[in-house]
Image (tube, rainbow, N blue to C red; front, top):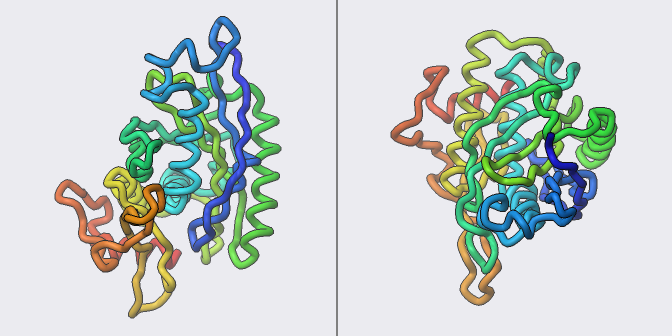
Length: 284
């Protein structure tokens, strides 16, 4: 039997963009498995907190990493994964959860680079019944999805927000799982069902590029123009550079000029160069 869980609430927001909506952490949560003694975190400091002092500190670090650093990449990853694995209707119309398995990296306290606090090990779409260790009430999850969908639509009036996909971030051996709600955007074509095979491979490429970007400690920022033949066709990648005068203040600086040169081990499913894959993805 799993230990009882409780929800921790957080507040905060991430800047909006084409594939980056503001996230309201007051509407998100984190489930922490309680110790037998009723306390949270301290008894599991060595084995259950992924190197953090408490499970609460681990949860805060994951929320910071998702909401304040890599929201653009992870939100795009969520949308691309939904399109690659059955389409919008199949995933939002049924009890599905996006599962992100993470590995701990550089601890983001003491002024460390928060972009590398975690890395993505595996991404999957799971049925709610396979996530019972993390979900105590699906009715509560559905209510939060509806609440977040309304909030995203209000804050992004120019975007077509179809709904939200609940996502859970887990770390092997840790007793903490954080919940997040990513907005799922409608396509220009209005297509809701399963995508053709070729389009699915493009979405798989986009998802793989998002994971590669995050795991390299790079941060996505939206392009000013994703619909133009002559402009950048995908988001920009950049690094966080520490400002010398303020130890814990970081500045985002672009890298590779928006060229999206593939990594040596990158294998395109679609056969397209990354820039072309982004162009197809953004035109859908």
